Image (tube, rainbow, N blue to C red; front, side, top):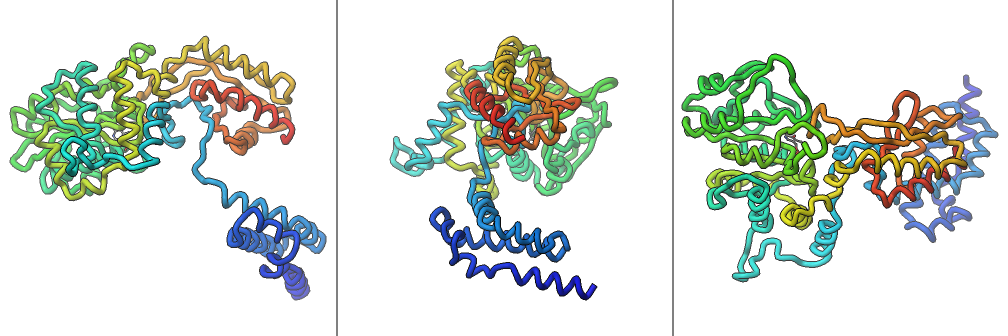
Length: 478
Ligand SMILES: *Cc1c(COP(=O)(O)O)cnc(C)c1O
């Protein structure tokens, strides 16, 4: 034991000193490529790693010498790793169009151009070009939001409605609850006390907003009479939460939004729906059962509706509140509103997205276009990729798949298409999956029964060639 300690100390003494390492060749050559502190941090990291391995008894004299001979390469790799951008473009081959972990909706070319222009210079973000006075940032999108809703069939009286843009739908819901119901009661069906994702749970958010939860009905059945009975002088709001990420089937009941709206009007209590998806397209066109829809929600007569900008609307991450002017005004004057306001780039992308709907050009929005890709189109692209991989040790074939839109938008609904199923004779599927993630750009895929599936629905057609080229190269390193 004592001898081991002495030996370990002896090995550790052979590690070079950081200062000397940086001044000596060949590490000094790395200083041409990276700033000194980056190389120093990388060298410290690598030395610490080797020291730990020595202390853990994982390296003997020969092992240590081998590591020291490779020292400059290890430091260069570590420096490279730490100076690369962390947030990077990836190829989404999961087939999930609104994959939350992969950033949900990709933006249209027009939205990107608009963002670039606004980002590169100054803009009239809060400046009224007409009067030359201070303006509001919401002015840019408000009229467009109401016009899109009207153009797509929500028969609104534009003078009675207003709209507001926030960072996301979660923020919109919180601000609405805090502005309209702090200190009072909010009536919610027990079937809607849901978790939306990422720990955003309605009962907790309600509590944080300062409102008191008044549960009615049961998990599967809530009737309009349950709501009516729960209304007291303390009631500030009736809340409806769209079940966007799950479905309940069987012996169920839930009043329609219009019934809730009528009850609210009668009782003088505003009705707020957290609608979520922001959907303004007809999902029936792509063979999906009609789900909740932003237009119908706003048209139902409820007082206020919250939706996301980057789900089925296909725009940038933001929250959209549409409702009676009086209620929107209450939210605008809430001192918390500033904490939820988006930056200028969001407005730039949102305006372009909304204009696409007004021009009937929504298929220029990638998320909408991806929903409309047909199975035969996918099969052709998959076959091209399979042909490209003919000489590769990867076994590839075209297989039918079902994919989902994702992002908590259309539970239970599937899109039929095709994918390329990959197998490597010497590699288990999870290693192949990992190898794909290490490609440049990284490719994110899914596995099914021992195979890796590349679902091209979410791969941009112009990425097909780069994907094929990278996969062909993969054989060399596998
Ligand atoms: C997705 C969703 C949210 C959260 O939206 P974010 O924009 O991600 O904050 C809130 N409510 C419902 C009903 C949703 O579907």
